[in-house]
Length: 115
Image 1 (tube, rainbow, N blue to C red):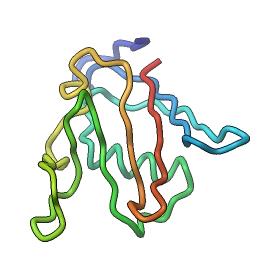
Image 2: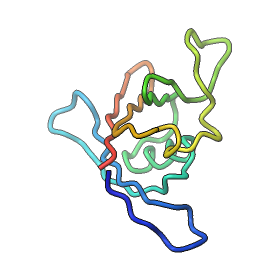
Image 3: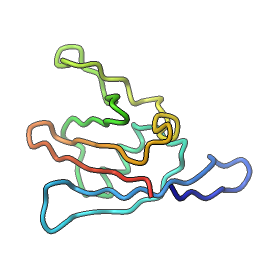
């Protein structure tokens, strides 16, 4: 994992993420830098902008077997932790990758690697 220290008073280390859209040829990918203290809710917005999505559909992160997103008690059949206050660096817990799914109908799966 490559990270850079930032100046005092800033949010800590920057994480370089490579975001790949799975099962698509040719490969579609983006590389972004985010602070390790970014919430998953904010990371969702970064991914939406980077990939050109318009945030019309539901989404979910899967990190180390845990699911994060916007809990919906009427639709959830599994435990989904609210993404609002969860920090990326903390929930990674040393993991080098995570999964992001956008639009449960079309199932746009993104593989995200911490480089």
